[in-house]
Length: 305
Image (cartoon, rainbow, N blue to C red):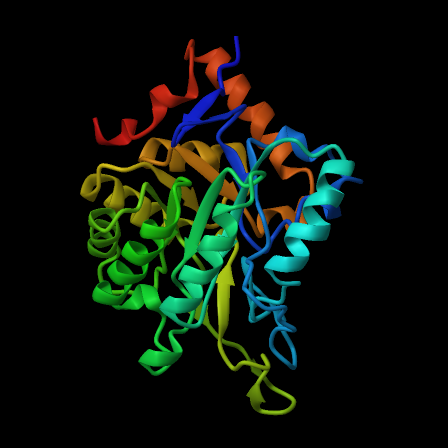
């Protein structure tokens, strides 16, 4: 019996553990630590139509209980991903599910890259990152405006038949409302949370340390906020949730599942514990065995019952 087997959006997962985009590369980088096929799936580094160098200056800053980053979506672009990286992943024996995280500066760019990913048979699911700055809206993130979030979801839904997960920004007043909006516009699931906005000041220079001034805050310190948001969104929508934000142990993963997450995504925790996915998978299996739970899905949303 595989107590962790999960069917998510019609796709079979050996367990409900995936990686957070940007924290696991393309799976190739962690092969010295463990077999990536231990994971239910890999959410690959965020992809754009064109190659990007990312932001200039300092990109990473450690903080108590977490880290800040302003990498700026550095990636080789969708062409290189399709022609080289997927080949490398196949040759490395990576056979677990692949989830492509897609990004754009305009709605038109999102549509264009979604069309491309639709044609890539190796990609099982699309994750639509709406935390990107909308250059036509003064740089405000797509996900910060309910109307714009709905529009980009609706337009991407029109051009792909693949399961569509919309990744939500926590930097909003009411994330449950945004979740409902994207659900109404065609999202098959939501993933949350993306990073919180933060900053750090260099006491020597008396200036912001990060090259982009602000960065995304992640790590164990954000877990209570992320957990609260997953709990709220679960009550607001009728589509499944991928929960993430500060998960660094089996216990953390269980809390997210009980709050309503059908899948859990590991990110910053892998940086300080590269074998975290293995530990969480083994821990979830052990918890199910010790508590006579036939399948992990029995626990999804149990905190609401």
